[in-house]
Length: 353
Image (cartoon, rainbow, N blue to C red; front, side, top):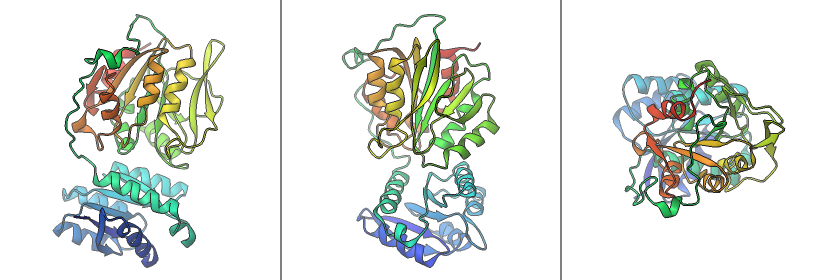
């Protein structure tokens, strides 16, 4: 049976294109369309949809106003936002995630793009993730750090006073999850933080700016050649892989020109793997909510060269229990914690200056 989808957009042309794309996949069926937020609100008050594709800029009631009203009326829905690829659109997309949207897709700028394969794939991928949100999987047979065979290649030797770095990976549900993690990290954390969030180019700067407003640590987009400093969070720019390189007694951010890995750029595996060639004594790896398994191979590779401490977000607090599940099943997770405890667990393992 197909999942029922609601499409909300003031453009009749884009509604038609989105409906055609969604209906082309037999997992989905568009059962209703609306041209503004007010119409959608009436639908959502009386009917439960498996997923909603919601435009941001519309007359009468826009997408952000609809999200606020749904929160007010305690109406739950799996919502994907359609955002324009502009500075304003990026800011609105980040705001929509704070208001409960699960993810967003960038709207095409013309009809050729709208009917192209790239937009079709992006829309179906994000809708698939949204409709799978909060699905509870069967518990893996492995227990963290219990399968010694799977974990045998990972160096777990811990020493006091180590030179450490924190490396975080997140995807679907990540921007909102990060607002429960980064603002809770103390300003005097005794390590730099590098972070990969799967997100298109143009949106990570808005996310970094918003997190910087909320946090005690400094949060910024990572720049090529930038010196790593303790108490600073460096976010991989959308559309760019980041690596960490040793430079004398210090470390710097580097951009990798590798193509997308499994459609991902930035890719957490590349970031984690690069840390194996650095001068850090230990890497505290954190895997948060997200589809797929990005991060697992990178951490496994890193663990052959460095001491790692792996923290995974627990299933019940994940929007999508994919990436944390994958690293859990690899048998190298040291701690599984609720989202609300992630920052505390990071700080416990790293310490403050």
